[in-house]
Length: 397
Image (cartoon, rainbow, N blue to C red; front, side, top):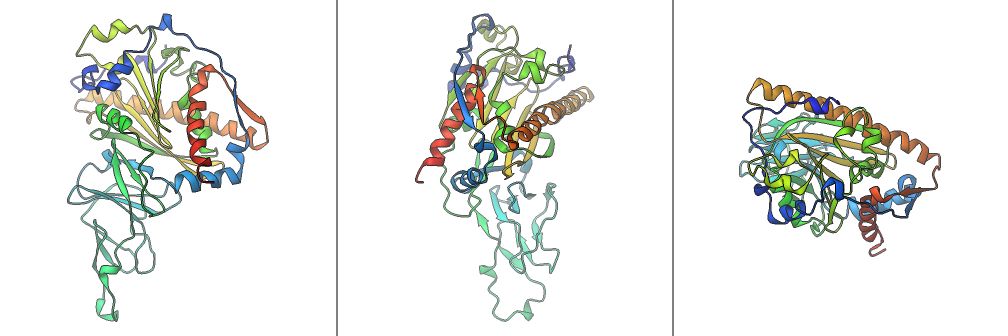
């Protein structure tokens, strides 16, 4: 038995029942067939090597997706209280995300309007009422306004109201904080209201961030993303860890533009199980896996939820910000032990298995092999997702 299967249930903690989920999500879950009745059809689909290795294709994605539309930067749960701030450099752009005294989340370029110095030099969460530049002590409110200038008498005609931090359009969407990186007018049309409703149902906005970790990967962001859109690899790549918890069965898939929702029953699943215990934890029966536009991955487990933001840094470089969310902080030693072991396991599974697979695949792709990647019926969601992305890449060219 794998180490995943030996993790015990934490006592006295909140669980998600089927009835807590929104009607659309409940209906989708009830469409999952029994394991014995599930079937998968073969497909014939390929993609050219260049989408993972070409500088021109990477630049096109940056222009048409990552600078054209708002992208996920961090989670609402990380800034759970007014006065919390965090810096983020994941997209190669220095950002500050702050929750002001009014509860609103705002994003700014992490640069003082005096000489450009960073205001926050690490990526830890801070609780503070103001942001002070370490260079010359210019001070800003969490609303971005310049509120203090050292030796202001030495500046002739300085207009403080015109030297506030550079703000970027920002929105909280289903517990994920999206930012328009180029500072222009934000087009929110690619974000699905249904996916946001699902995330609300799953408790993502109000969850507790038990742990988070950053990974710097030598792989294209889509190579990193692919395993989270398919089940073909699970029993093979994860044979020694979590593979025995899953079967080669099709997901119930719904697409909302370039957003994909996958629902699958666990080993031995049958629809009748949903009604055996109305107060039971639905995550014991069903795994939810989402790819939210364009690079946010959410995967549910029995006692926690994994969120990953896959941030492209170069053609074959990706920064992954991983968050393990629990419904609430551990309140007992047993719960803390379960969460600790879960975190260690999932970091090993994603970091040591999925991300390792991405890096060793990228090496072959960079060598030009294969000339086209080929996809099977258990990988059809990858093709669906690429179809949606490609529509955006070819629009208004």
